[in-house]
Image 1 (cartoon, one colour):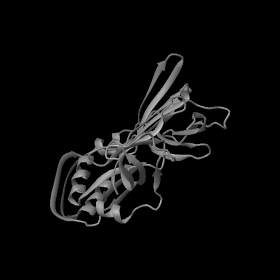
Image 2 (tube, one colour):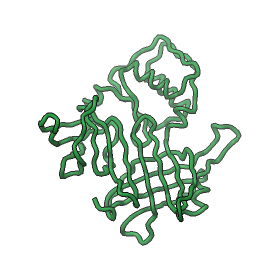
Image 3 (cartoon, helix red, strand yellow):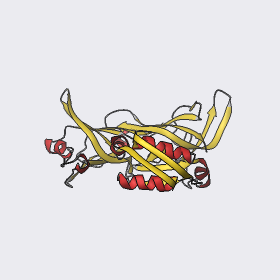
Image 4 (cartoon, one colour):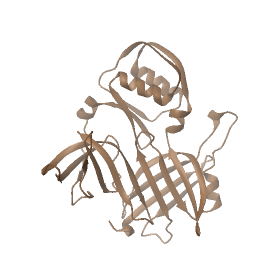
Length: 286
């Protein structure tokens, strides 16, 4: 895919609600230099670099502090990418940290965003629950720690006689509870999802990304323990939990792969001034 077809947009919103949009669009007169890396994995952290921006933009990234840690209001950012006229959001969240560095004539603002990491690892849970369903415990925890964008997708709930947590991170607590219902947690564009295998199989998406030699597949996928590791042209539709249809020739066994798989984790990498513009992910049989 030629670089001039790349469409990249970054939106920054300061704690007081001011917004700025930076874009690299072949149809616009002014094009900003942007580089990004999006992890859709356990940490769900995105790194964005903007080149040669104003001091006022840097100031927008500074959090607004309050009397207590819980009163702090962070700046937010969104990243959308695509080709030509198409744009799809692939990351959004609070700005966790920002730095400014010099590289020759360029002054680069780099910041990291995530909607969950501060809450998942910034809070410790000390609490006991008795005679309570796992789903109810999760909802209570999410309400207490301000997680409103989530989905519980497990087929069988479990009533726990008693479970106690003593200063463990919220992330660890969620993992323990998910294990009780034979589920796992993952993130999808700022949304926390707890899902089991049965739900995944029964609710397959009707919108399945096809990857073959004519639709963006790069090289030959490599066999891994869980399934396949795949690289393609950057595709915003590929996220954790989504279904992809792979079609290629497996050189190790000389057999043809033509099946659906579930995306486990991966990354989007790209920018307006580098050759990289790809999606790389691991998947298992759907």
